[in-house]
Length: 105
Image 1: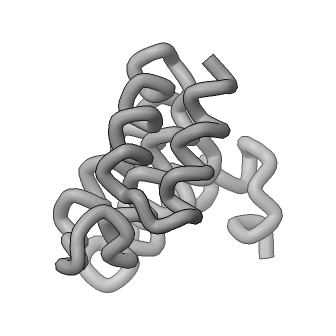
Image 2: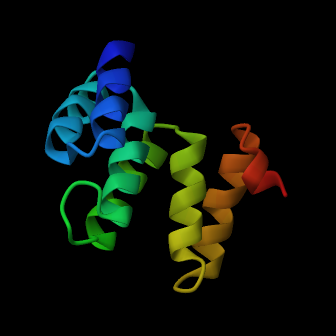
């Protein structure tokens, strides 16, 4: 399972976003929540296609957050900060409790 995550990271880093997406989706389906965080980053930054897609990024961050990823919770909180501060706070606090140093600051 961890191999899927490592291979997905490699493909994203080398510019093969569609191949990276395949491997990261496998990792996410196998229960590695942070794989969805990486897919979210890839959509947010345009690594999968030349077009950035914040909606798909948020969906993947939310999947990771719901699976217990402190990183996913942090990014959901960031996305929601301007739209729903109370809900954003809930995710940031959960992220901090999960060990996220960024959320704790």
